[in-house]
Length: 238
Image (tube, rainbow, N blue to C red; front, side, top):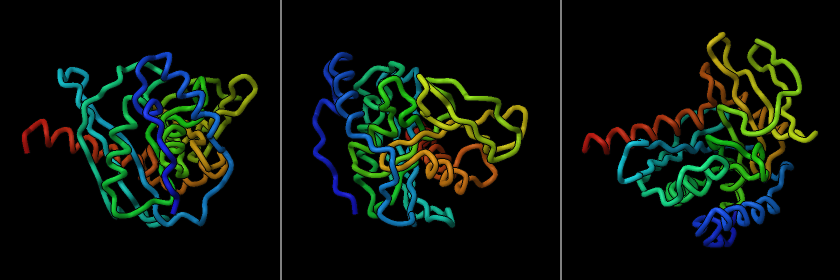
């Protein structure tokens, strides 16, 4: 089992944008994008959040769902509701969502071998998207699964077949992989990026192995469903 690192307060709750940038740079120095999995995964978690932009209380609804691998059956779900303390600023998503996601992680009775996070890994200006940030904070392998490229450009055209992929480059560095997970002209590809303790090659393989006919891999798809269910249930007062 991975042991948690010491979490510096400013790595979760920076007092300013300037401090957030410093914290991101410090955490980025800890990121490892090589395979350090201790074993073949048997439990993979997905993490996602949901919120209402018009909610005056600025609540965030977070979920972590653990699935068996490779069967992809749900084994455990943990949710939480917290107040968002950091404003929405592109490039700083981790400071807005990571505190609540870590709270859900602490509620789990099972311990995943790896986490797929709805968001970017090193596909980030300072190479520290939310997936990389959570990987460093929890000292656990993570993969970023995002719907949009944050930085960089595809190295070429993407094929139409499921499984087609093309590297995303930024300043001649590969910072992710554009990946076709579902056919259809209206279905946009996803971008997979290494988060922490996992290589991009392994990340792409695992994501493809977790596709069950939907655009998103099951871990983040189920986490998305759980976070939205949490939000709608509380909003209805149930």
